[in-house]
Length: 422
Image (cartoon, rainbow, N blue to C red; front, side, top):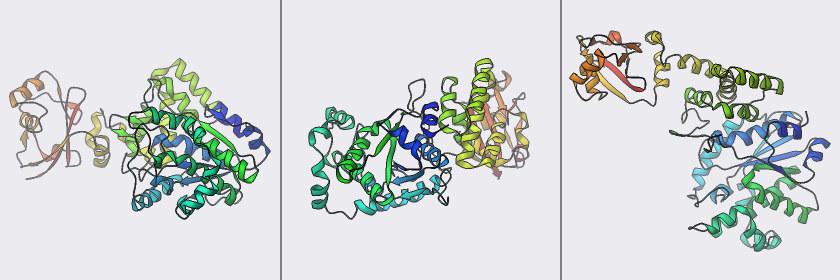
């Protein structure tokens, strides 16, 4: 399957300029996508463009990732209702380093025929003087056309409006495309559908100044079937950096994908072939309770981002949630699973602490008498085992690995007690 048809089948093709299909089929070309360094890590919302670059390289084309050290100092108004907080040069440099490391998991920078490149547009944007930019670039853009761009129109109509700083972003991105054409013969720019105006502006600039036809291809903006922005959870964004989102919680994010979204996400975020995805579609239709498609999605994406060993650990840790064998689990796995649960550190004497007192101390209940009633009714679990004796005492020997006791009220109210000798 050629790359254009691959994008089309995977539902990654939202729109494209005329001639893209022929250009991709004619031979190896160079294409780029820009990544905004607003944080020291990419999040799952960036995965679709990352996968687009990776698919380009696998199809024999040369991918460039621009990590916008220059434009990151300005901020792109596309898709934003308010102006971003401007970053310092030091912040941008720190963010660039983290993003480079993550891109290296998807792109081959040492390939002989078509190596990937990471480029910082500060190389040219930080050195060009204002008068030269206005004279050589600005004169090719009319304010009328710029006001007609959707991202600009939305901001002008908003209460806050748009600053000249962000209004100029379209010119800077178009200049990026021109510089990449001059340096690397880059003739294709990809991005989200909200980037269409910026991308076509770059195509026009290359045509006017170099007499060459450049191309644009935009990807859909990913949302869930429930209409929620993809990658947003109650805990916030899902990051690729394991220190921001643990591999376990990353795996769980994909495992919890809605049946209505899972096949589309398999197309977007994995390299699985059509036959495998079609087979998973049949399983999902005939036996959705097996969640085979979700497990495959979680395994594939977690392996891509964090490595196969983290998939094994995430699946092992998942068994901890309600498994009665949790007492023999690895303490590290237990703490990963319950990283978001409230926790309390307690010092225990050799005699230990009454269960009812511990429940009240960590505030799972309001009093020892309430704790006793809850235990009698079967609503308390210690290390995933239902407690039956309201007079029981808990000692360090009862802790998982001698360090952790899991208390649970009902099905959901978890509390991690980290114990140590008094």
